Length: 346
Image (cartoon, rainbow, N blue to C red):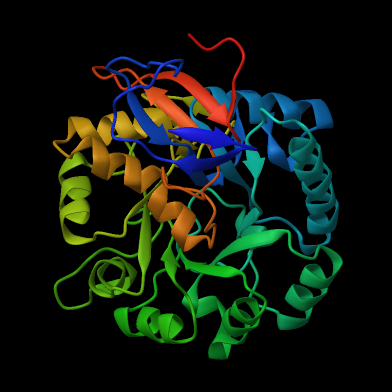
């Protein structure tokens, strides 16, 4: 492979020419793209300081995540401006650091959610409001990459259409919507279903609901939390076998207590994951999927669904965001961001 100015110029045939870096038996993968990260370690993006953001970016990079969407859960409407302004400064700071994971836009998970709020604060959940959305997008241009909302919270699907017209990816989630409601939301422009099976109505044979729509409609890309806690391995295998366009997300959070690679509220409700995408990839392979498929679910598919055409695969013309994995454990061995190797890699 030849790299110049952070871009892959040419992909070879696997034989290392003289002077090339030889990775031996390691698996070379594109950098992972995580569309749902609430925080990392002790850092919660909702109240992170500039130093917190830098530490979180560095930790994600060490785990092979070279692009990500910091995610804000439902909050009072007047809290969003300050959080998005902080995210803008963090994105700009990351762009100035050549070895830091890229912040490719914010994911707003709420506040327009339905009757399956999960661990979200129910007092902050409100019906969709187009004027508020328009004002937020105007105040923070180009920052919001994805919004998760519930079809039943978006009367007439006006918010969905407003977001889509602005180039924002609309994801359906935290919802007890019927199959027909989900399909109508998809007709209005929604393209993603957030953490399939979690925080949504059950898949019933007479009312498939949002989960059924996610598995049935080829226009929808479901995301999955593959920590082996949020979704049973059998359900993971069924979804992976059914849909070619599945994307892995970590949904990592920092609050609550960690219990078997998941984070729970004091009441015991699942609040998020504690497993980053490198471990999720290994888990998917452990379920019997190929390494190639698992890597695509963590890189190519999320990059494509988010409109990140310049990354997600090892192809000439793409960003040289790369991860070398141990061939047995799939643990991250080395990481390159824009062709620059992360210091301290083995």
